[in-house]
Length: 257
Image (cartoon, rainbow, N blue to C red; front, side, top):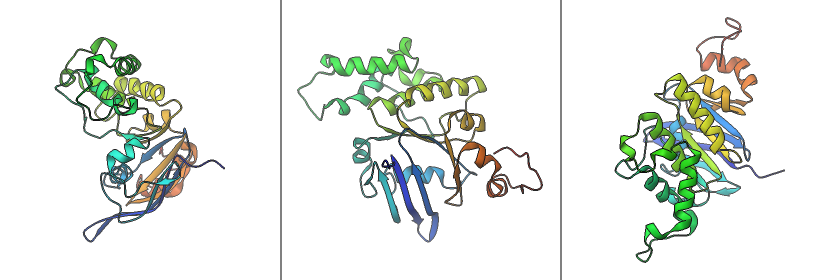
């Protein structure tokens, strides 16, 4: 049996006396695409913050490719092969699109803190950044200041930055939030392309995006994973219909997830 790419074991997080994450457990296999859904305030982004090391867990464990990362700092987790995006676009607005991507590839290519390398002379970094630039559909925008991009293109750039370093596990927090239908459809196609061969976990509220991308859906309510299965089975789960939709299955058998 293969080692899961990402595993949460009875994960808990308290802020003072308030327990936000209440024993969440989840197993994500390599190259699976998992959507995490649930009501606002359910704890989805908090789970992302725990997994990526932004918050320390109160108890439980987080395993990346079989090794615990619970006590590691965010940069240490990233260097072990996990990268994430944020709800609010997190790019270098005063750097060009190309420079954002070049920054993202440096560590994976072996460039550490150094005064002896001129960025302009790093052909491998330039080539890899250019390849990602083309992959995310911003080839004509390389010299544009990132902060001047339209919103949907800024989100595409952030996805590019997230995958540019070669991480095998990608976390995307509401990647299509604020987009029109056509923009969201384009984002789904982009995410599918750039995460091929990788493991994807995303928080998403747009159900057409969820059902268009996810192999499995994890439903989070009050800091617990109450259902985790294929989209079809989650859609039909009475507990999901009652807790997430606020309806009972016997009252509305056709309710969408």
